[in-house]
Image (cartoon, rainbow, N blue to C red; front, side, top):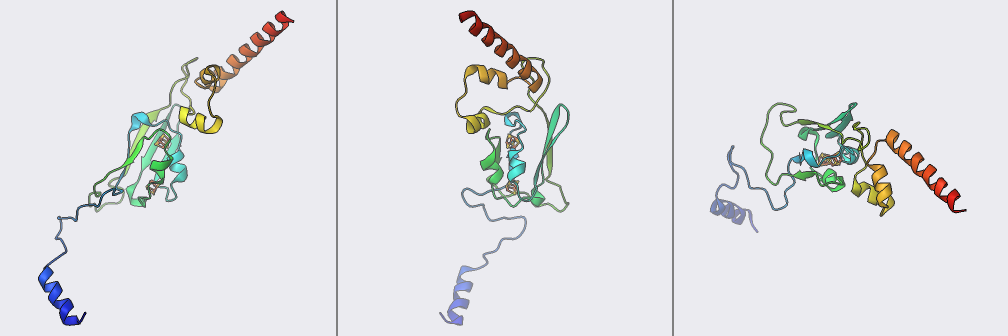
Length: 172
Ligand code: SF4
Ligand code: SF4
C-alpha cells in the first residue's frame, strides 16, 4: 500500500482517538480494580502471598486483621482472585477512574477473626476449602476440633484421648 493510499484511508476514517473525559469501552472480561466482599474474607492472606507487586497487604492485630489494596501498585494480573479460597475477590469489569493523587483509590478494611466455639476468643481459622485441600475429607469430630482455638482444641483432644483409653480398658 502506498503512502497516498494510507493517507486516503486515514482521511476516510476520520478521527479515531477520543477526547477526555470520553473513554474507549473496556473489552469483554476486562480486569479492573480488585474488589473484596469483606463478609466472605477469612483473613488467610493467600491473596497477599501471591501478589508479586505487594498491592495487597494483610496484617494481623490481636483480634482483627486488616486487608488493604493499592491499585497504584496493581498489575491487574488476577492471581489474587484465583488464589482466594472463599471467592471473596473479584475484578471490576469497567476501567478504573482517572486519578491524580497517589493512593487515591487505595482501600483498607479491618475485619474480625471468627470466634472459637469453645471460649469465644477470636482466632485465625483454616477455612473448609483450605482444610479440604490440605487433608481431603475429615471426620465430623475433627471438623469440630478445628472450629476451636488452639488452646481449646488441645483440651478437647486430651479429653477425647482419655475417654478413648477408658473405653479401651473397659472392654479388655
Ligand atoms: S491483580 Fe495481581 S497485582 Fe493486582 S492485587 Fe491481585 S495479585 Fe496483586
Ligand atoms: S485470599 Fe480471600 S479470604 Fe484470604 S485474605 Fe485474601 S480475600 Fe480474604
